[in-house]
Amino acid sequence: MKAKYVRPGLEKRALVVRLRKIKGQIEGIEKMMEADADCSDVLMQVVSARRALKSFSEEVLESHLHTCIESAASPSEGRANLRSLLTVLERYVA
Image (cartoon, rainbow, N blue to C red):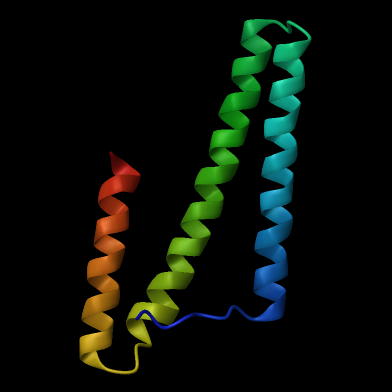
């Protein structure tokens, strides 16, 4: 069973706020589609949402590297966390 990482309150709150902004962007794109907005405008919003999600994922990844791999309780736990991360990254870049 994987150890659960509990993020510090401020870090967790900041990430949740970022996700809510991304959610708002996605909802905005949905409304644009419903309103038959110009395709270029819709695509610009999609680009913006993708960048925001990419930035969010990079922050989570950096946190994971520091807390779950570098600071693992044991070398075997670190290796297991690294294997798990590599599996995720294979899907991330595909």
